[in-house]
Image (cartoon, rainbow, N blue to C red; front, side):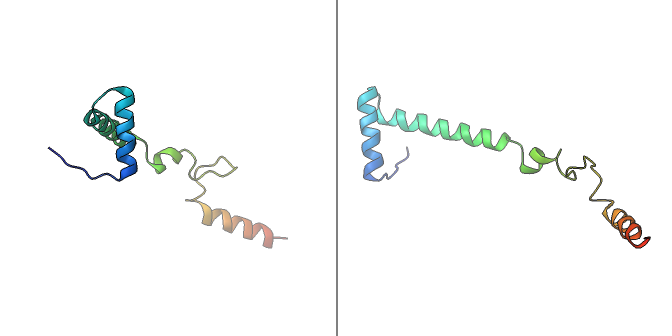
Length: 85
């Protein structure tokens, strides 16, 4: 058994819904909890931010995926090319 304190507005909404649907208030609350728990389960099964963007990391317009690991080499090449003039 569980007791829950609700504000007046929420309690009135549950009462109205129970009267309109002709179902007990406890069933409304149980169904709402089942819905909430299922939503939490779905959220935990979603991909992380890293997983969602992993195919984009390291690529910016060039389409090259190794820019972050070779940036020093690329920078030296650009500096040498500029100074060669």
